Length: 250
Ligand SMILES: [Mg+2]
Image (cartoon, rainbow, N blue to C red; front, side, top):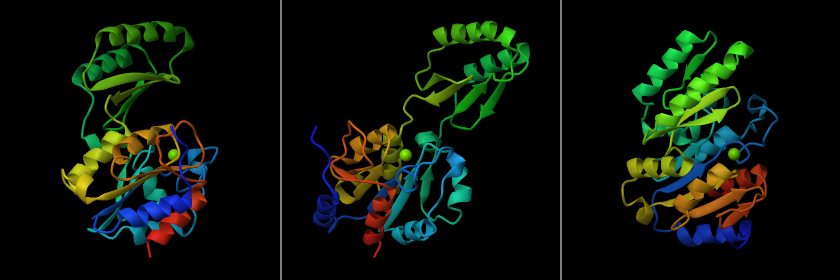
């Protein structure tokens, strides 16, 4: 894998690719891509000119901005209250229109009925079963029951992921790549690869799924420095990403 090319190469590639393609789509991660990372997700500082920049970029139907983040969609109500583009939260799980299968709800209901302190956080497309509040001496039996269920409950669509005192129940296919492809299919059409120019910007390993979706005909851009990456281009930090996008908005 060759190292990603720099900003000048990215701009040249943009100028080569953009004429004749429509719409132009900017698929943007948020944390570490448009805003600097913070010790806690609530502690990010949103640059004062960022909301206006994103609004200026989003000029439908010819120019579209879609933010694809690991955050829940609601979190953007505070950070980008007037954003006119699309937001795909939860790594895209929200966009799939799925909900976990019934046997899971039944099993979780049983655990909650038998063990005080178990509770289900229902986020729509994804669920999280928490047991932080369960008495420590009751936890081993609970976890054994959970494991026993998982050993037999193979669902073709959903899977369970152990977290810290929690079990995440998420769609197998929910990643930023499938979410972006589904969104492009809906918003642009099945021939989006031929018609649209898609630039995907992201800093994290989960953004690689977006890169592999856009790379054949679009621009995959890593923000920051992380290896390995499939991105063909690199911008060194969120400030550079904002500056590069601002130059596209004029
Ligand atoms: Mg990120």
